[in-house]
Image 1 (cartoon, rainbow, N blue to C red):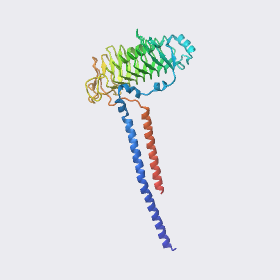
Image 2 (image 1 turned 30 degrees about the vertical axis):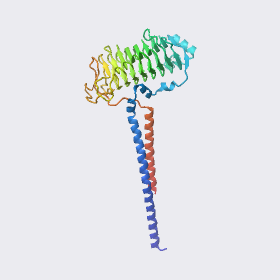
Image 3 (image 1 turned 45 degrees about the vertical axis):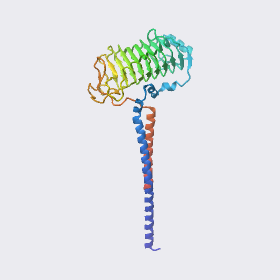
Image 4 (image 1 turned 135 degrees about the vertical axis):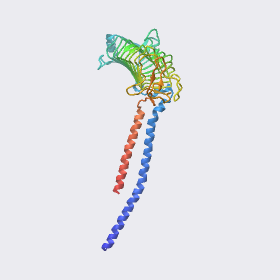
Length: 396
């Protein structure tokens, strides 16, 4: 073959290779584009679900709403419980003695508290299911179901679980229902009430009558048939946070003769009366980052003139003045933000929320986290897939 013919053959073969590469590229790019578009749509749909999930939760009925706040109590209550008679503990020595007799773990120190757990207690119409008085050792009451304490002679009688003149107690992950009072605390300080299901009691879900530095957090408190969700009376420096307070016959949270309490990041919905009611003797209460939804007959999404808060006290603040963050009110009309006219609070105090929130305060739920993780994974997979396709095309 002459040199001229060889050159023409090489040129022809090179042209064929280029045509083949162009053909391959033209066939691959549409597939790549389709995959990218489909995954992009999926990711947008997942992000939309995550964004609108709080609104979907808000519109559910108040009777069902507490079921959306899945927490440890609902998981732990699936474990076996032993039927037990009512428990009455009077003093540190009695607690230590009963711990030995009952086989309760712990030694009463902060590092190793006594553990009272996994009991089902029917109070049989008596004054209490579990009563702890005159104790300052550390102890935990957890994963117990306590019901039918209905003798309400004097507070805290009629409590499923009661603490009197007691400190350093933790009441957590219990189911307390069908009592006159769910959990009653009297003349007690430095106690924690957390992640309990306190539903369907008569007068009060959680009550504090005299006490300092107590914490009420992460509880579901609802459907009190003739009273209040959470009541603070003669209470100081109480932290009431991240509770779901719903469907109570009167007020969601009630404050009387109490000072310097913080009511923050609670979901308060569907209570027949005000979501939060502060009597004339309630002072220096801080209320912000709460979600008020359809309390006191307020209708969501309408400016109906019905305030969901009430304040007859003095020096109570219904917003965080430093962070300029107030509360979510389902019937706020969206106007006058940053002024006293934004959301007036009923009552003689002339209180107001200057900085109402435009959307409900919501927790990051497990489904939302999983959806977000899935969206991120799909996005990463898409990027890697596209890069690989580009690399193969360039190699062709």
